[in-house]
Length: 89
Image 1 (cartoon, rainbow, N blue to C red):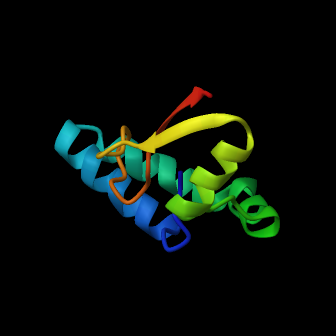
Image 2: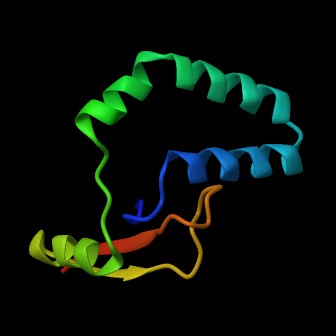
Image 3: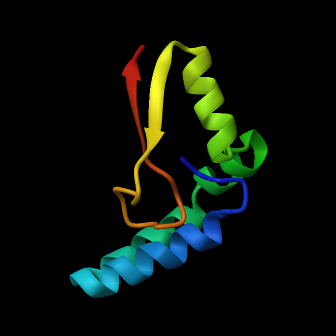
């Protein structure tokens, strides 16, 4: 889940740090460049992207009939994002 304060720039830098540490920096730079020049960038700005605080997202999960908890670490490359475990209540 993306918190309200995390933007595309943060995602890009997190990906580059991860790519450098794991040996695919060149491919990541090419991929980010292609994304920046693609229609995705315009669509993202036009349509927006859902961002929620932890409280907001937990409320949405509860309203949908789940019990949930935020995991201590995000499971993907950007530590600024959040990971939740949700179970049917």
